[in-house]
Image 1 (cartoon, one colour):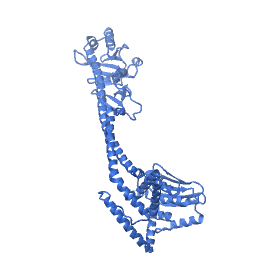
Image 2 (cartoon, helix red, strand yellow):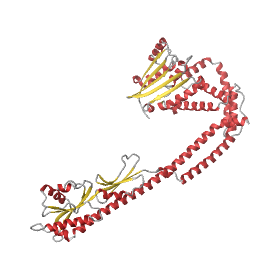
Image 3 (tube, helix red, strand yellow):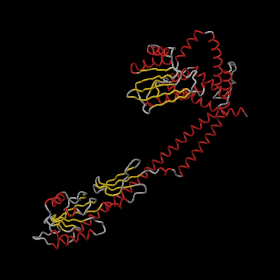
Length: 561
């Protein structure tokens, strides 16, 4: 039972990986389906709103056409035509009858604001509500003469207000539109007058009532909004705009997509089906893995434990397993060859010294990796699987960023992950006796720096700075962008460096011409910066005994993600 439990614990991480992959695939399928449903919903909602907008403009156009039809009916009236007859003297009764006629039409069912008739022959303005103004002054008559020159077959304007005789202008507001149209005599066919029919903006409000809840629409005459409303802020709003056939009328429709509509029964059925499908797949993966992976892995682990204890001559039992058969044979061959190599290395001290020197120059050191493996073995023996999982994840994260796909540069944001993983690994070795705090400005996160250039500085603080320290260690790394340079500082609260030794370090950094094993990290980093950036990069070190050490790097910004 204990062996089976241990096997399940060892395979738990693999199963979690499988489950994570399946969950990601399921989420991707759900995402694709939701995107498809959202796109379809957007098309349907937009088409529906375009239809509503077209209906609104159609009703506006019908209303405007009704106003023009009223004018055409009024033109045919004998009472109005009597006003167009040229007489030697003004017939005041005819003009009074004309005023009454206009008033009757104004009081009709179309909600007219006013009807004005300007008679050319006498320069007289007949209004539906203010009476008759005989013989307008030239400046007032000029307004109607100007309208007449561009009237053509008639047009709509919003500039009529304020251009009337003073008595009329005082009783009207500025929120109405006016249709201007020349009036011809039925007897001579000549233009004898100018009619101006005004309608309030308010008459158009009823055509904006078709907007749905939490949506709004507005009618425009040119750039002027004459009815409806639009949100003060258009953030998150969708806006449709359509022009009417009667220029320059147009309408705008504002709405938001209701994403809650996506949460339909069909979506939940799809999610349930996919979830069931992937759960069945996960169960099959677990079953196959138990039979084809867990048992061979146990044999390999037994072989590793034998190597760990120094028994290099105990081979793994050979099987015909198509997956692990070659691996087992390779492992046996490796242990045999390793035993021979270790024996040969005992007699090759000179060669071992050369190898040690080369390993010292490598950033990813076997000694560091050896300590990690020892910690993993110890955690496995102590059955501290959560700590083991944390160490494995940190090691994977550290070497993933350290290797960096073969790239020599790394983003500071990725470098932060590398240092975080490194801190977790070192805490397994030194215990939870220090903290690492990394602060990157938003601009500095996407700056690129040479890979593995910061880790040795953090290592110096942990290994040397906190040695025999009677307080909790703290390492703080800060990076910020200043112009075309990125400023990086690594500061600790460790034991500091004596003044004489600090001068030696500074001198060695300044004279660095080749890799050195003395003051390894600082000298090699200084040399790397000289080779890479020349005079564009700088490195400084400051330290106060008993208080801590601070290393500052100033690097040029060569590229951003």
